[in-house]
Length: 298
Image (cartoon, rainbow, N blue to C red; front, side, top):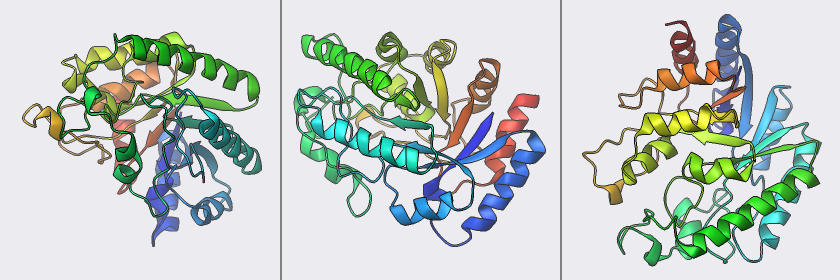
């Protein structure tokens, strides 16, 4: 199993020491160590980390002006972003990239990061008719609608084309945080597409609460399928005490107080041989690596 840090945790002072500590922890516990270049990160950080010789993966789109949305009628911006990412993967010896690829819109979505905020990018494609309230960006249940079914088929067809077009590279589709018309939510949405998957724990935690599902059953459906090739593991502080329209993402250290039972998820990843766990945590430390190791030995 390889444990990766997000590159966002390695952009400031002390990044070299943080890498050394992570490498020592991974060596002690029998893990490999790598870094995932985040889609909001810049070229300077990418170059810096590449020169360390550490194994890299990408969170696509990488250094692109556009987000990837394979559900749009015209996906030219998305396919250009993927092609650009594939070129960078070859340049930096990267074999695996993950991306979000399904929003209920035909409008191009500008990339966030490098000077643009997440909401600045996605507020432009917000559809109040697909939200739980006009003031919220959280998704309502539109998954049985003819439009959703049509767009889902479109995404599946384009994913198949991507697999054909890039045989030496692996593009994983990630389950979305349930906002701004995101369409890749549960295993029942992603598994039929036949594409390798990245499972994000806090996204699924939020989706399970918002759509009144059992979180454990939902992550088991993903991991036990054998199609999960990467997990974004991080904690969320949110509980049922928070109104659904006020929920946000996680990205907190694994030892943060939470109700997610992250150790069980780590054990399930080991049992079903998920090869990569990405600690998508800005203030990550070796404590998070130790947390995974402890889970596997309990």
